[in-house]
Length: 127
Image (tube, rainbow, N blue to C red):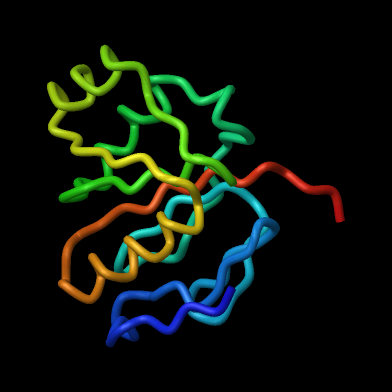
C-alpha cells in the first residue's frame, strides 16, 4: 500500500508499507525497527509480538518520545494491562495497532511535528 503523507519530508515519513516491508525516506526495511524523527531507523531485535518483553518496551524511553506507536504485526494485539501501568510509570505513553495503522498514525503524528517513536514488529522473512 502506498502512503501519501502530509508534509513529513523533514521527519523521514513512511512512504509505503506492506506485510513484508516498510519504506522510510526511500529505503526499504524488512525487519522489526525503531524509527523517530531525525534519526536513521534502527533494527529492533523483536521478531514477533509473542517474544516482546516489558524490558523491550521500557528501553524505548532512552529515545525520549512523546508517544510510542507500537505496530504489533498484521493484526492488532494488546499489551497486558500491568505492562501499560509499568510503561506509564516510566513516562511512556504507548498505542498498539496493526502495522498498517501504525504507519498511517505515525505519519499523521509526524505531520503534527510530534516526537513520535514507531516501534514496528515485522515477522522475519527469509530472502
